Length: 199
Image (cartoon, rainbow, N blue to C red; front, side):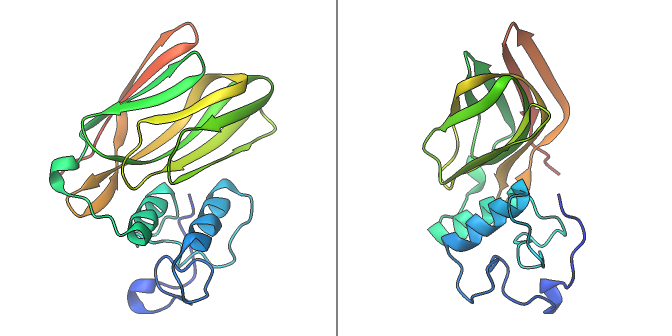
């Protein structure tokens, strides 16, 4: 996560509007690509101010979810807010079960094997980068909600090091609280339960 950047879009210090990552005056898929590439470390942005779509001072998957939903013109309602979610990993298939909307996932996984190859399910945004230490960072976002995540076609995911899950909170988006997460392991299948942070 990036927690410092020049300017503040709330007081007019950015080069563009919130979400205009490319700085071309148009909010579209190019901005999502730029934001994802920055978070994955593929192509870092010189100025991340407009990338901070949520205005919370951090550039992360929360900004991707907000940007995707703005571009698609989709709004959330409180009846769809998730209060709990369960990540399921079984036979190299990842899915998530929840009691409401899951709009984004950002996770770092460990894997065994010489390489990791992923076949993503149908979501609006899905990308990953493989690191030198047998870890990979995976980002997924969807306007309508995530259930199926991916299938691993080479390598084997052995654990999840970090995970951020985004749900809705009335008309905005929030990161679910994983401070009390439980991990249940059975061989190479495991479950992670996560609860939403509700005030």
